[in-house]
Length: 129
Image 1 (tube, one colour):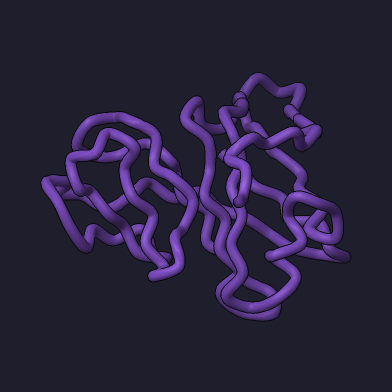
Image 2 (image 1 turned 180 degrees about the horizontal axis):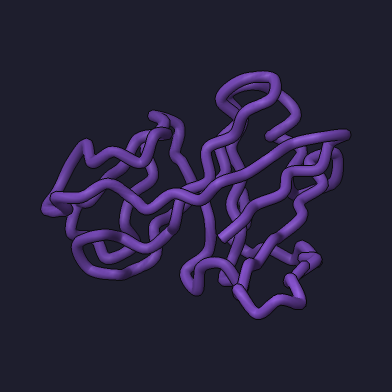
């Protein structure tokens, strides 16, 4: 059984010019994010400075990642990690489901999950808001 708890320590970088840029660093070579070492791998972050509901992380190629909000666009409940069918389901039980691109595939949500920009180098995924 896989835990939903995320004990990752995040590094927050902010610019001193007041534009409120926020960045999180995730080392994919460390647990609990080692699933991201392979293309198609997924992981989840709990609430953080970028998104108060947390983030879904998907490795889409050797150098690219999709970073999605865990905030359901229908109910604002948290969206769970991807299941064995590759869907991230809303925790409300209303049937809202999203694919790895954040697109709605089931239930009442009518909008895709919000996404965030990222960069990747030397096993470190940098997520920006």
